[in-house]
Image (cartoon, rainbow, N blue to C red):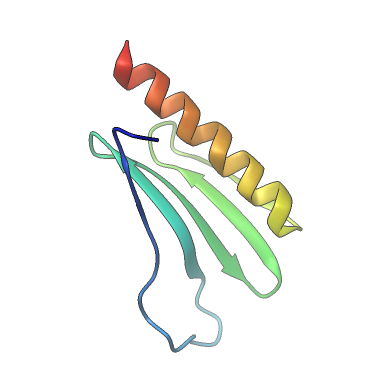
Length: 77
């Protein structure tokens, strides 16, 4: 989205047992992030303080983009 900022984890070394940030988006201090841990993906929406565990990367990215659209729509209103 044009008014927010995407970010990624710059750390190249993965630590065992620790979720790894795949992709994040921040807009007006509110964040949406995708983490991967042991073959599952979790999408965290910091605005609503909810998360969804996904088994596939495609589903996680879809949920992530829907959360980003919601944040951008609310920010422009």
